[in-house]
Image (tube, rainbow, N blue to C red):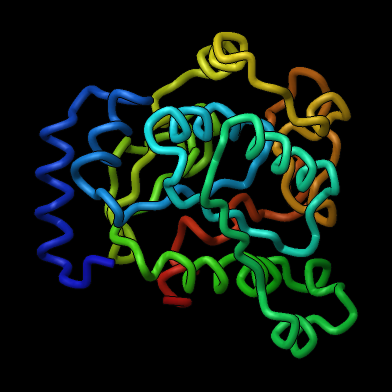
Length: 239
């Protein structure tokens, strides 16, 4: 992690200028191979759109660390899809990030925290474990895109947050481009997509999405929650 705010700001300014206008693999390759070599990881949910970014990473460096957050509330289909993609793409360093059994027992003994306090559940199961996992890196890669809307609508390809440089290689890609990448590279589809769960996520907080509806509208239905916390101030609190 880049500890000095001034250093972080200058690093962001330099990188943003140097790689202005680039996205996808054209942005990701020099970031991985030169700018943060050995000090960068990909955080992946192995969700319904994740294969596109995972394929890019595998083409550049299949040994790049991939941090997979297993909340203990994931669909079984996601775990099997992860295994399928790891084997297909030859990913060599996929690390499972999860809350400790002791923490879960203390804070969520009946497994129903998600229903009582969604933010607290995400903090325990996603944010805190990830905060520990990324401490050994200066930069991490996300799969967020602007077309997902909300706070992501103005997402920059490179940003500074929580003491890290975060790389968003898919930020400017359209949904059609993501779909085309699946076809171009012969990537398998997540089984949940055919069942009406396009975002994936935890089964406790996911609902089916009607055809043509916002793909993220099935997350945290009935609440004003639209992010799990790993991309906002909740992560800062855990670091």
